[in-house]
Each structure stands twice: as structure tokens, then as C-alpha cells.
Amino acid sequence: MIETLKNRSLILFIGLSIVLCNLGPLSARNLDPIPQKRLNQILLDAGKNFNTVETLKTLLTQEKNISIFSEPIISKGFCIFKRPGKLRLEFTEPFKSSLMVNNNRVYKYEYFNGAWKKLDPGNKEIMLIIMNHITGWLSGRFNDNNLYLISGFFRPEVTILLTPKDKEFKKFIRSFELGLNRELNGLDYIIIHETKKDFTKIEFHNDRLNGKLMDNLFDGSLDAPHPIDQW
Amino acid sequence: MVDGHPTEGVYLNKQKFSMVPSVLLVTLFILFSGCSTKTYAPPLGKIENSDLISKLNRGVRSQYPVRFKAVHHVALTLLGKTYVLNGYLTVNRLERQIHLIAQNDMGGTLFEIHTQGRKTSIQSNTKFLKPSWLEKSVVKDLENLYLNTPLPSPALSRGQDNLFLLSENQEGICRRYLFKEEPPGQNSDQKNYRLMDYKHIKNRKEIYAIAYTYENKDTGKITEQYPSFIALVNHTLHYQLKINIQYFLTPSGTDTAGILLLQKEKRRQ
Image 1 (cartoon, one colour):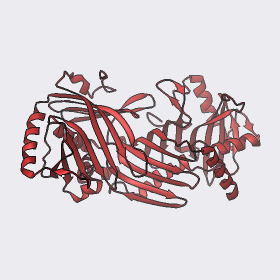
Image 2 (cartoon, rainbow over the protein chains, first blue to last red; image 1 turned 90 degrees about the vertical axis):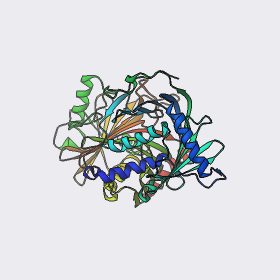
Image 3 (cartoon, rainbow over the protein chains, first blue to last red; image 1 turned 120 degrees about the horizontal axis):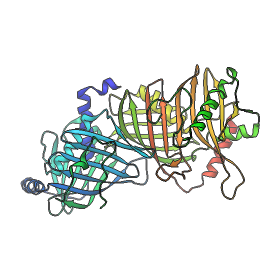
Image 4 (cartoon, each protein chain N blue to C red; image 1 turned 180 degrees about the horizontal axis):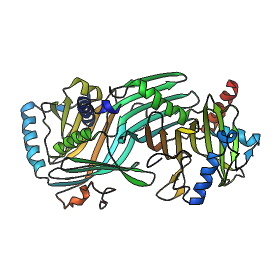
């Protein structure tokens, strides 16, 4: 299996699949589509606004809706971002897990049996692809025409829908739905529409923009993620 | 096993057995008892108490509710590299039914497994996780975790530190369950026996092991009714799993379901 895992094309495919898991198409709801010309302007404005964000510190709540569970599965965590190229995505409940990128290097930590453990992940390439996508979205770069068809809706705020072009990718992720905030300078939520009716919604709250974030918060050379001040 | 390979004895939970003398005693107990008793003289007693044997043997399957849902947060280590997955799981032990949806921890379903009775269907969305490999690994792991059956006629040995070893040879493989006796709970004078680990031994070598942890390592208290952490190693297929578990239990009477399970088991016998 490892040999196959090392197959670059497959890795890229899986990476794409995962990325597509994190975005999703808007399902058939009564939504107000944004005309293409206006959408282009919104994307341009949002790109400029997002570009003013040097640092971001936000709590997140993930709600996973999966077909075999009648109840949503809730996870909590946080995300911190520092331009350029520093991103840390960490879950704190119910399981502790941390993923960080620092200047194109990926670090992965998991908390098992009472202690953090630094992993040597077998899918670093995938993680880097995913994290680069997230970094791109946090920087206001949504319109990657090579990967996605892009459309927009008001629900009521601006929602960007990214639909994968790749058929294999679509087997994993039908679309990503990015909910922009009213100021068009940040994300309120991401919905990943997966296979069947499964979807994952990640909501961001208590955002703090352009506060001071020390570089050591992204230091992957440590045995455990550097502690972070509580919100 | 948590941080590497287990030794050729039993996996020792370092947190639970932190005293060196205890470790030695437990190791000796494991090495010289159970399935090894035909080769080595056991330093600790073999027990002929049929009631206790029967109780522990039933305990093999009373470790979990009859029906439950759970999330597994899993680190799979294979040839030195680790892959983190989330498993979404429904189990109905009465019907021997398990449904697992396994996703990459960042999202995206990698494979789905559905077993009911002797039928298993596997759907893999990735070419690198072949159904044949999943059947030998994940399906077997799920069966060993949740669908284990009592041993036909096991032997029981007692060791220090209130440890009990239930074992039996079956077709060249020794299946061994290690229990720890715990004091009776409130409103009961019955002793409790907690399953600590489960192993397959072949030619005196451990080929498969599951170790269970019930305590909250952050508080040091054993508060969990069901295992909160499982460490699994498969020496044959060369992989290890570390599994954090979150249960979703419904208040509907598991006791009633447990009785049904025992009745069904008796009918099979």
C-alpha cells in the first residue's frame, strides 16, 4: 500500500479529493444567484479586502453530517494564520489534533493517551495542497479556474460555490461552499459537500484580525504544538 | 506499543503499570501462563473456578453496549509513516452488523465497510486502499474489537496485581484475554473485571494485539465505562493503530439488548 501511496499521481488525486471535500456545491435550495458580472466584481473586492489581513486568529466549530449518524458530530478548534505562509489548524474537542504549515513545510501532531505526539505523516503532499488551498481562501483567492467552476449566491450574504471540474475529484467532493462575511474580508463558514448527502460545515467565530501572532506559534520543530492564549 | 513495537510479551500500559516490579510481575505472568502452560511451569495459579471462567468469558462480549455509534480518530502507522483517519461507526452486535465510513481527517470518504452476519461489502474510493487489503485488516480489526465471541473451553490463570488471563489454543493460534479485577462499585458487592488486552500468539510470538485504556490521562482517573483509547498492532500485516474513541450512546435499554444477545448466544451453542 505504501508503494502505491507514493505514487505521485494518486497522491495528487487524493489531495484534490480532500480539497474538494472542503468545498462543496450549494444543494438545490432557493438561493438567489449572483450574476456573473457582479460576481466578478465581488471577487475582486473581496480579494483586495482579504489582502489587508496580515494575521487571523479564529475559533471554529465543525459540524459533520454523515449518513449513518442521525445527529451531527461536533468538533471544536481554532485556526491561526500569518501572512505569508504560516497556517495552523487545530482541533481541541473531542480529539486534539494539530496541523501546521510554515513556509511550505508541514507538521502534524496528534494527542493520544495523554500526550502530544509529533507524527511523520505519509501524506505530506496532500496536506500541503490542502493547507495551500485554505491559505489561498484566507487570502481571498477563490477563482482557481483550473480546478473549479465558480458561481455565487446570496443567502443572504455572499456565498461562493466551487464545483470541481475533475470527475475523479467529484467522487469525493461535490462542491465547496464559502460563506463570506458582510464586510467581504473574511469567511463566516465553509461547507464541504461530500458524497451522498454527507456534508461538513465549518463555522468561524470570534475572529481577531491583524493582532500580534508570534512566529513560534507555527514552530513545527517542537515536540508539541506551542501553547496558544485562550480567546 | 503506543510508541513503538511491543516486546514479545504483553503490551504494558505504562501509565497503568508504572511501577517496575509490577511490570516484571505482569510480564512473568503473561510469559508463563495461559497458552504457555504446557511448555512452562506457571509461577502463578491456574484457576478451576468454572463460575469465574464463565463470567470472564462472557465479559469478552460485554465490554461494549449491544448497539452503539462511535467516532474513531485513528493514527495508522505503516512502515514508519502515519496516516490520520476518522472512522464513523455504527455497531449492532446482536445482529453482528457494523457499518464504517472512513474519512481522511481533513475530509473525504476513503472507504466504506458494511458487515452483516457473514456478508461484508467494501467500497473503496481510493485505488491505494484495495478491498482485499481492507478485508484482511480493517474488517478483521472491527470483528476483533466488537464481534468477538467467547472461547469454547478456555483455561484461566491468575497473576499478581489482580490480573486474570483467559486463554485457549485454536488451530495453532492462542487467543488470550487479560482482565484486571477491580473493586465492587457502589450499590454492589460484585467484583468487576475489566478487559485490558487481547492477543493472538503463534509459536510463542505475538502476532496481533489490542490494548484498551479506560482512564482519562489528563486527570488520571478511570472514568470511562468503555475504552477511550485503543492501541492495536498487527505484526503480520505490519501496521499499528492508535484510536481515540468518542461514543454516541442512546439511553434505550442496553440491558435488555444484552439479555437478548446472551439468549441468542445460548441458542447458537
